[in-house]
Length: 263
Image 1 (cartoon, helix red, strand yellow):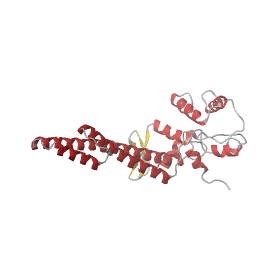
Image 2 (image 1 turned 45 degrees about the vertical axis):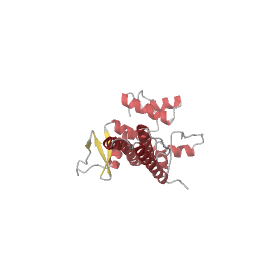
Image 3 (image 1 turned 60 degrees about the vertical axis):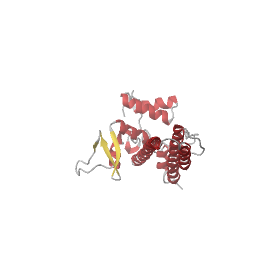
Image 4 (image 1 turned 30 degrees about the vertical axis):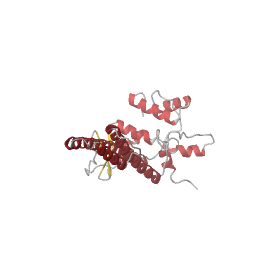
């Protein structure tokens, strides 16, 4: 039986549409480079992020307690709030001969330092959490973008997504929906004036990257000479040099930008 979601596997692996099926049915030996891929199911990924947040919070607390211990010249093991409070209490009792006002000022200063340290660590953790959330949102948006790419393409969905961003487009979540912006301005349907969907944008934007059918009624069976700077010439160069998919995508993106490759 055929595999239904082979297109999703190709997008996940950064392959152009039809490439994985081509590898499976080919008599030649193919090898996928998985050294840079980390594939997790959603449950495992969510659990991983949750544990990272918990570990980071505990680590921030321990670091703050350790710094306060060193600042106050305290001597205790186990970086817990209870141990810190007990150590401060013991130090206070040992210094009970100090004038009440001086002792109060010292304790007040120590407490303010502790508060300040906790505030800094809380800010650092909040920044870390925000970065994680932004990365997760970007991954979701990229997945939504690439799943709407239809047909066989010259480059991977990831490359087409990167090309859209290079051309000034951005994709942001607003009220639970992804909106398309160009230089900060939301793109709208000219007739309804409603924000265009990611699917509508991709359907239009992907055209220069789709392969044109050849042979039969869809095109000519003749193979004309490759023109310098054309896609045909580029593909022959890639085949001659033995470039893998990653190298081919990088080189294509670079040449499109500098104008030496026309699609």
